[in-house]
Image (cartoon, rainbow, N blue to C red; front, side, top):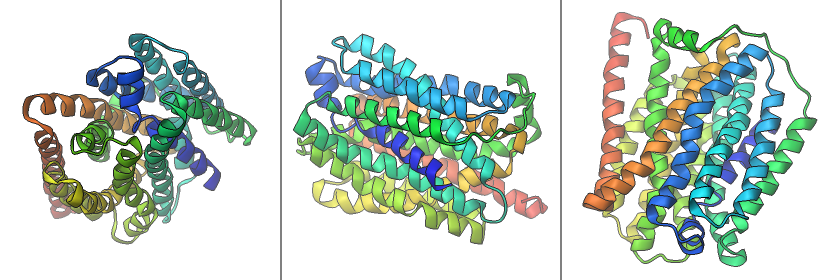
Length: 382
């Protein structure tokens, strides 16, 4: 279990490695705009939207995980290496879409392989361990990318990501495969499964709004901090880390909490408080911003393990990759929309409006879900 989680950590590290240096790479080096910087993440997550469910279906039908993991990571390595040779921002965005298709093949199917092994009463702790790997990778990528950009140039992070994805492909190829039962799952049966087990929509809804806020953060937040006077990319990366590091390190403990009290209370209460604090971000100066970010990271930590635990609980052995693909589809949709909505709101009303809106969406989902769960409890169907 530790080795797949280590692979996920490195894959997510690559996801934010280029974040802190987007200004230098997209805007200064390639002559792009802020819109191009936001699209750099949105086109990748658009690929996630299209291909995450597709790869899950194909993997379930084939009864295999390893070939898809290796191919996804190897393709990502080659695409990231090509980024360093590009001089046109529009060509870069096109390659980014293709790279997103390969990346989500690797890490989404790898997540499904972890879920294959997550059975029994300790499921929450395993989900917490996976969540810690995912978020720790995201957390470390941002500050490390800032230092790499400052010390080695705007294109150095994409070359580093290419190297790391190559190592992931090699490592995944050396791990023994573990065949699973083939599933006749088709795209139509995914919709049918959601109709039959509509409670899958609950963790998907939370994952959507959570990734929406993170998508807004990883693109809009560095630009927001830059507007406050933090012009050093390494400083921007450290501010991101103040949110992401507690988010990562508390995942395992959130998983244990999920095992102890169940997934519903941490999911709803954590999301509600997270949304309230998120509304304060746009009104905090550099001095107050760091404690706000730390509190935000602590609250965010309790949300992922219960959401993915519910996804595992509401899926079956033969449809786990499909359910994981649907879960990642919801998250990717939020991650794709977040930067676009944040950029649009900033252009119309400033950064304060962007953070207020994302916090309000989180609060709305938490309150709605809380009402639904209370109804289930009253009926004895929780």
